[in-house]
Length: 573
Image 1 (cartoon, rainbow, N blue to C red):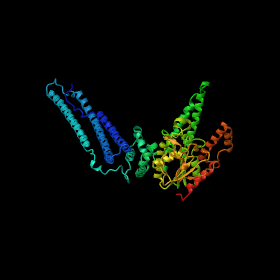
Image 2: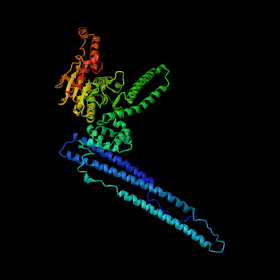
Image 3: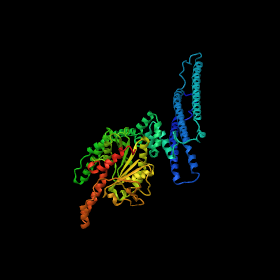
Image 4: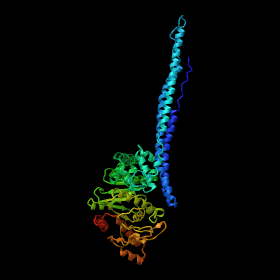
């Protein structure tokens, strides 16, 4: 027999509460991101919108950043309240289930035989009444517990702090000893601050890949100042959980970036070796028709072996990786000890530079390595590839005649220079720019990437209009028959470089020590128009061009020593 005792229903469904809490958490993340994106986009507006009220509009929008943080924190606090409320209702649901089971089982069986004369019926009725009364009291207690939980939830929600709008008028960006210079910097620092407080910043970066671009576009000096205020535990946690961001973030201490990238190399090695093993496990093609596949596999094995050898050297500390972003095509290798260095050399290779050039038998880092070896511990050198460079293999659409690569890499190179300067402002700096690298260095100056000296080695020069930087010394060298002389100072729109390196005001011309053209070949071609002689002439001019990146003193000794002397010249510093 079932007694009609109503049990109170819960005030909410726990799963629905948790779903709503999850929505609040997601909304919090998206809201702060949207405000950050708005600030970032707004910082770009002055390029297209110039009016007297522009500064006022910028200042007004800037005040939304701390409000966004407070609103986001409030949403997260509300989320936690709802989650606690759901947990309480779950606990009370167990009590309700026990009550429902007892009610549905009915009253206890009669203890007294009512067929016998006496008060048996009265006693049995009283026992059933006591059971029903007890069940009703417990149902009432459950109802009160539901109400108490609801009141606690409502009270906690009301206790979530409101936005302190009155405090926003004096806001000038995240906490810093100096005001943040731009809204884009404010956005980058805000994202860094957010990531530093997250348990899993890698998840947020994966969900919001645009954050990395905003952060890396932040002024390196502002990043350096922000990083210096982090406690060691927080900095180490961020480096561990977001190594690809930290390992490529300009403004961070040099040694810390190298350490982070050494760990990244160890992780990448596992992936490379797995791919190498998978390649070995493939069955060899037996048909002659598959000969090309055999050649492709051999080439891939050789490429993997070179890459494995390179990153093994990084992982064991033989090579030092300052930056590495394979998705963008950037790789910057460091040589020397920054803790003892008095001068820094930045070597910018030109056409055909790519990550594989660091892994060959004659790596592109040879020039930098020679300078460090000759510097007696006083020089730290970086071979700098910040992104894709022109390639002769794709001459028509991506060859060195296009100056768009210089524009793109110039801004990145400027940020690299500023990052080293932020980390070690005491270093005397020289930029050694070979071939197309000279266009990169010239564009970097337009973005604030300036050094104490630029050494233009067979350089393409600059995209005009161009003005040299007042605080920079300029040096230029090339062979008499260098291939670049054929088109130096020639350009139109997206093609070429209109300012030849030797025409830069105040430039010091350095004798390359390289031989001139083969007079015999010139004479032969002049009298016979022999194509073979012309090929030899062009080949010599190309060899003399590439020689300026050589570490062989018998080939490039004059320039190697000239650069060394400048790096060691205490008066120049």
